[in-house]
Amino acid sequence: MGRISKLELLRLTFLLGAALAGGLYLDDDALKGVASIIAGFAGLAISALVPTMIWSATSLHTNFKGLVEFNKYRQAISKQLSFLGGLFFSIILLGVVLILGGLFGWKDVTTSVGPQASHWFTIHWMAFINGATVFFLLQVGLKFVALVSAIRSLFNFHADAMEKQIKDQIKEKHDLIARSDKLPMDPRREFGETLGTLGEHNKPH
Image 1 (cartoon, helix red, strand yellow):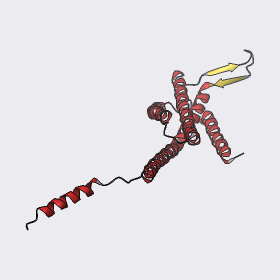
Image 2 (spheres, rainbow, N blue to C red):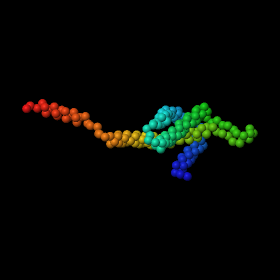
Image 3 (cartoon, rainbow, N blue to C red):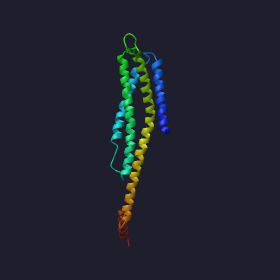
């Protein structure tokens, strides 16, 4: 198992542990007072995330020297879109959980499973909602921390591609000049010589 897989496993273990603790120990209405704040944060995040996803999806251009360079660029964009898509759906699921909590009035709602005479177990939906809210809220928070690094990485990738393109254009211009039979003359040189000649003719004898 590689390092990335271990980090993902550690992150998932942390999220599941926090969700379990939230479901078991939080009161049914513990998140009622902050639900509107969380919903506002989710809406703000979505409004910032959608333009970023559109920009990433339309950032491909045709100024590539070959398929290797193009595929490298496409893979970076695809990886970025996968990350942004995961963050987007996490925020959507967080909103769905908050809506369910509001529909239940942030009060315990139970469902008994099994024969009516002797139930096998009882589902406490508010415990599930509280745990899910903690899970998705922490997941979105962790992803937003990584989002800053991801956007910076994408910017550096774009900047490197543009720098390479500019260097290639400069190299092509230099090669074209080097292959030409005669270098282009500076028009200011001929104009200066003309002025000097005129000045000599106008000198008093």
